[in-house]
Image (cartoon, rainbow, N blue to C red):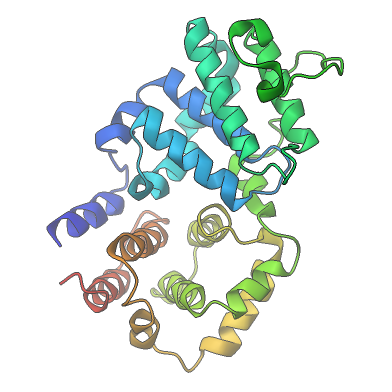
Length: 299
């Protein structure tokens, strides 16, 4: 319980300080640029596949010491001004690495792409295209120690070296997690997800008003962390209103009580992110978070 409360208290800070591997990562622009490039691979075709997201998370754990419990804060870091500055200079920063390190990074991109390969091992064309572009930008090719087939290099002429689009933010591009309307169906058939979303909505309205920052935080959690389609959020909110108007906070939390501790901590992190989004945590928001923590067994 002490660790949960400490984590919640840290999230309440106006300028939160990251701890452990995230603290080191936030001060290491080269490593941060590497993670941003890996995340671009997840977003290459505009649709975040669960298998690719899991591969990304495994790479973060293996190479950067960022575990599953750190994912909410990592995504917050990836949306920070510091990360946006690193993204603009990503390839300049990464070219500081030696050939072995750049090859390892490209190999990580291949692992993410392969996680979504079809039954005959064929990867998405957009995934291969991003791998080719990145290899060119990093001065890598088959001779760098990555097998041509595994790297995604073919006899097709390379695209002219250019950096991938940065016209939209990482958070905006993640919204294509599922095809249109599939997210609403997912929510309607997943009582656990519905309960979590109800609590997030209640947290947004806890102080009787919904600030723009809170709405943005709710949308970011739904799209980036829960994998819902941003285009469907209005329909999802309508469904939650119809389904949840008679469901109390306690009933929603009770539906989550049998989850494992890691998943329950993740839900508390999501609630805390909404609570502190506008820079001020009200008494109502604090009480809702504390009551939910108790109902989830952290008391």
